[in-house]
Image (cartoon, rainbow, N blue to C red; front, side):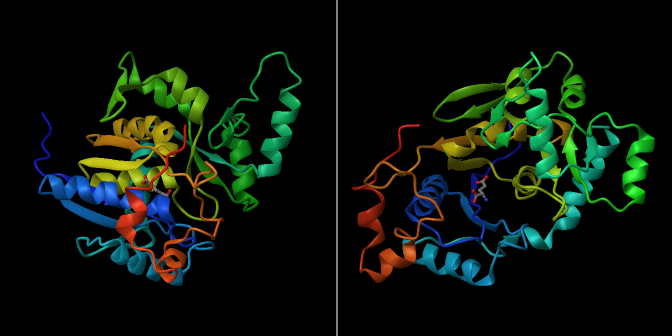
Length: 297
Ligand code: GLU
């Protein structure tokens, strides 16, 4: 029985562009879920990427969600103000021996994959997040690591997936999706979809996967409501929750909204931003439910 008594949901956008209808739908699903159950709805700003996040986009998030009719609990958590929390989580993972420094550039990874794809065994697998990491730095000797550290080579921290799986023993991790039912985060899925995922990037001392898991825990999120594009990531999030000793929330991965051509809304596409729709005189309620079209993924 969960110790969580209260329903707490969240919407967690990154201020790297203007919100579109797909965001409004996702935020509203999380908001309505909490409202219908007498719970709380939180807004979290996922701004770990200093190079791409802009204050004007953050301001626009507040304005656009207010236009959609949402209100949220204050204070808003901004990830860039909580790097210490992610550092602490990395410390726990490091103590468990499941992290390794990766000095590879994207080019190194591509080259290694090209070379190994000529080998009979296929390690050219792609995860939804790009090519799977081929393991280049996983087994570097301590001396080889030291040489790179001494040279000041920048590095990311990756999860040593095999090591993490070995800590699981014969347990199978499960998580619940309210629409798709109970899911098992099996070793096969974790290896083939996510592999040695980056938990701290070279340019920022955390990653999407790590900070979202830490924050959902620290904010006592009971239900994570987000798009199906993140379904695969939840298997990794479940593994991180196990390693960090967190109770998993319940998930609901909703269908993704598409435009009239059946294409998923994306930040790079400016046509359907909430700002533009507002400027054109649309009303949020007319856009979100009666006319919503979903992608067939
Ligand atoms: N920040 C993520 C995004 O904008 C959402 C993360 C989540 O809901 O887990 O796609």
